[in-house]
Image (cartoon, rainbow, N blue to C red; front, side, top):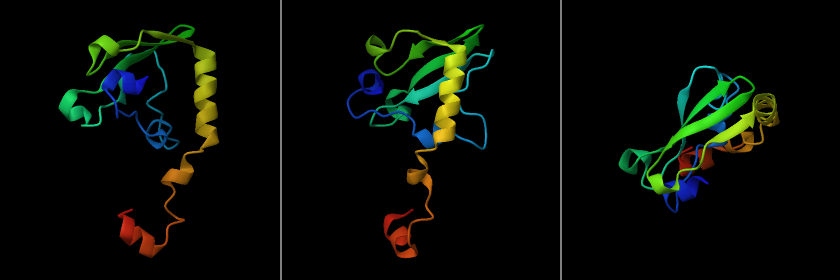
Length: 118
């Protein structure tokens, strides 16, 4: 979905960014609408614009709407999610922490860290 809306080579945010345990996830939906950055083209969003949507809880629904992006003719339609199911999936993803293998740098040796820049 992201690549179609931001050109080939586009990408979405990394799981470690949107599924944070030390603060509320940007994916969490509240009654207050806010714009969420969901993707960018390969050349960066600063060049051609980001793929964004307005995320808001409306009663028993979580709505992603108001899409904007580099390719306005390819932005997704509005999404409507059952709020309880949305919250449960977000909590499951936060608890799963599968992306830690990509963000935990403790396994890297000092030599490797110097070589890779991490």
